[in-house]
Every structure is written in structure tokens, then in C-alpha cells.
Image (cartoon, rainbow, N blue to C red):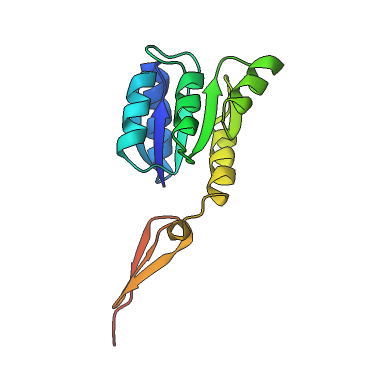
Length: 148
């Protein structure tokens, strides 16, 4: 699964990037809203994670722009803005989910799994087989069956 992660806190971004890659996600990280728009326009992502308070364009502006362009990619707002009004504004801007910082990494993973269940791409759960090789795309396990 491909994720675009837009977060201006480089330390947090590197940590989350590392943890997501350990879970076999493919992650592109950007550090401002304009780069998030550019990456989203140039590549196909399954999920976009947006911080609200980023330079150049806020996560809310990015979300509204992507929805205005009919981009249907699942969007998770991951932000320190945690009031009820902030959560409502984030969801009303087009986000599919909202997670306030600080957060626990297992909850982020659970929310990503929940969003991925809504994706209309079947390759995420497929097992690809070729001759005596089998690749499970969910857990990235490749097995080899020796032919007798």
C-alpha cells in the first residue's frame, strides 16, 4: 500500500516513516502542503496522511484542493489540533478520518487498516503466484515450493 505522508516536523516524519516501512507500507514523505499537492497530482496513493499546520499550504487547504480536483484518495488528518471544532472542520474539509497528536502508533495502524478496507483496489489482499513462487501482497511474504 502506498502512503503519502505530509508532516513538517522532520523528526516525527522520519520516525513514522520508519515505523510504517517496518509494517511493509511504501511511504513518500513531504514537509509542506505544496509538495503534498504536487506528489498527489503526480502519483497514485492509497492513503494520504496530512498534518494540518504545514508551511506553504495547510493540510486543510491540501485536502480541499484534492477534493475539488475529484481526488478520491483516502485522507487521514494527523494533527495537534484536537478541539471538537478542529475535528469537525477537518472532516468537513474532505478528510476521511482524523487522529489528534499525541497518538499511539497501533491506533494509527488500525486507522490505516480501516481506511484501506474502503479502497476499491483488490490487489491489496491478493496472492500472486508464478510457477512455484507465491507472493502474499498483504504481508510481503514470498514462498517458494520446490517441485519434486
